[in-house]
Length: 394
Image (cartoon, rainbow, N blue to C red; front, side, top):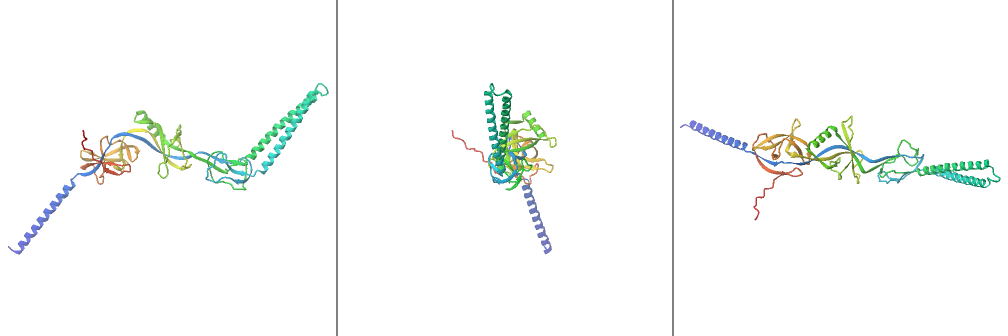
């Protein structure tokens, strides 16, 4: 056999070996591709779930009053520190009171003079009455009685003037009408102010308790009422309200409904509600944006962990469940969220196994091998604890 023939045989043998290797590799790849995908599943059940709505709201001062002078004068002193609590009756400002003290002294003198005139007129009437049957005429007695009446009237006027003078003097000390926290003073010592002026000297705000006003659409309120009447929403004994601060933290305290909405806004189509919260640490300030979480009652629904779901391009929410050993993609209908799960009202049934883990590259209809898992409050998936098969001793 020649060298050329031997070379051709060697090449053919090598090619045959390569073809067999490729075929074997392809068979292995095909076998690996056909192996079921291992996924973690959790069985879901219908259960009573709190029906919670989250609404935007604004904090409103429980009490707030602008401080204005009731008498004119010059500011003599500012008697508070801005931002520090004051009690009702605490002095905030002093107006120079020299003029008002002088007016009070003059009013006191006028009253004393009026009292003396009354005493003199009364004595004259008493004397004329005793002498009426002898030397005093009836006209003289009547004239004395008129003088007494005029003196008494003058005394009443003097007493009223004295009260006014005392009030004006008292009003030179401007006091807080409520418990609260005063703002920075808008005047300084030496500023001239007038009685009942337009500009406030400062504003005092009571922060504890505090109101929170929220709004809800009338359409949503109607739907909630329909669900209650249909029995799909069981109303709780009392309304539970909590707050989420701007930081996302939940406020430590529950609210009380103060003013249930009675009318619908013609411009926004919403109904306003007012709640009251204790605010001892002054964490909530008037004007602050908040979110109110209101628990209206409970509803029968299925909870599907949010990590098991996907938001589709059309906005719908989908998840995978196990169906006859395959992954089945379903579209979910929801009624809000609870903790880290969707409140699902359609798309899955009680007893379905929802796929939580192994979702990457999973396709509808793919063969799967299920492994029971659990999920904690932080959304971390763990293998389910094995069932206890140990027989109990008799």
